[in-house]
Length: 138
Image: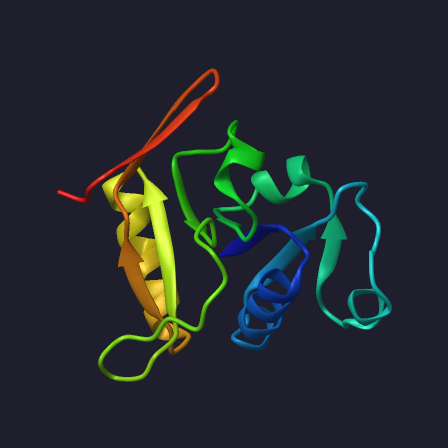
């Protein structure tokens, strides 16, 4: 399975390393498709590309505000909430999911949980020009 990560910040790079070590093919998107930090440039096994290249993956993780990536919505793990160390009752770090495709979100939940994180579903994201709304999970 291929994983595209849009956002090459601390969260995106950390997830990329976890996923690559777990055997996934990983593409991390930067603004211009080039490594933005020496650490990312030196990562072995991770491919640095554009958002379009990352979006071609089987699963796409948004590790930047979802409003910055409004063209990519079927299912997404996103850090659109203010930075904080959110953990579940078992102490696992929480990653939030937004999307309308229940099958894709189920696969994403298994992926997130399998890496030792806790998936939390925020529901569907409705994108209209100038408006972004998260609807509660069913």
